[in-house]
Length: 144
Image (cartoon, rainbow, N blue to C red):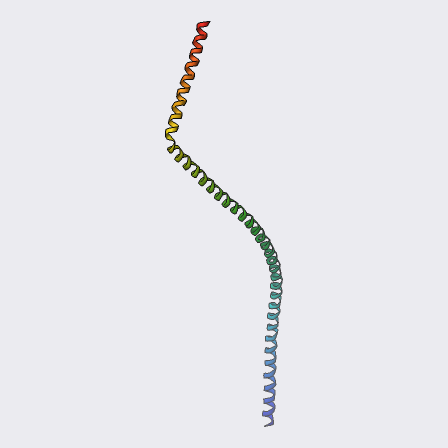
């Protein structure tokens, strides 16, 4: 019976040794895997720092660009307002010219007869002036 006990203890010791050997192999493999993961994470960390610095630079440039766009937009708003005011002024000028034109037309219609008389008197005056000129010319030619 003691022999069975010794044999059992020896079997337990062998099983424990085999278990320790496999456990050691497994832990060594896990250590290599964890070392590889740590190395990969170091590389990722360096890349992430590079991306972070580039992103920060890009963000600053984007902010500067947005400030520039905002300033130009404000300047453009002033220009659009000026064009709007010019359009309003032109509209007022057109309205004023239309009113004056209508007033002149109305006055001309009311004074059409007076205008006709002035035109006929003007034509008569021009005709008389031509005749006087012709007479003077004929007198000068006859007198020569």
